[in-house]
Length: 217
Image (cartoon, rainbow, N blue to C red):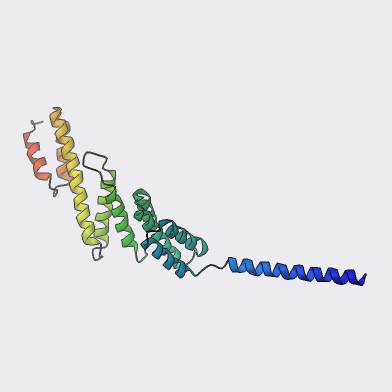
């Protein structure tokens, strides 16, 4: 009987020791690198064009360290990964979300600029849908007004002008279409709108000329 008791006690001790080892192993497996180390790895992965790895690391930071300032940086890096992947619609939405969630962040001007660049990548010719153009003009013009001293202000102003020219070209093309279809009232509406909305565009002089050829109301 004593032998059985000793055997049972030994078995229980061994089981307890095994459980301890498993627990320690689990603790080791669950060890997560510091947020800063993960972020550095994510930056390197992005630079190396390993976009899946960069996105996974950014997600890990936000999941494991949700209250760390590095998690905010990871949110911005995640948007940069989308842009690098040429997922410009998703990138624009992500940069917009960053601005809305962190309006006082030190890099908010960067986020606005990158959102504008995302729309710029989506620009179509003047005879196509101009929604991305309008969005780019709004974003870039706002950036130039709100952050005139930022390193992005000059390019933002230039791209806003580019966008206004594209929109003016679109309006001029529509007006010319109405002129060909002998619809002077519709053409006049488009030309007057162009001169009102884009008076400094490269197409304003031609709009003025065409307007002068239309019959009086």
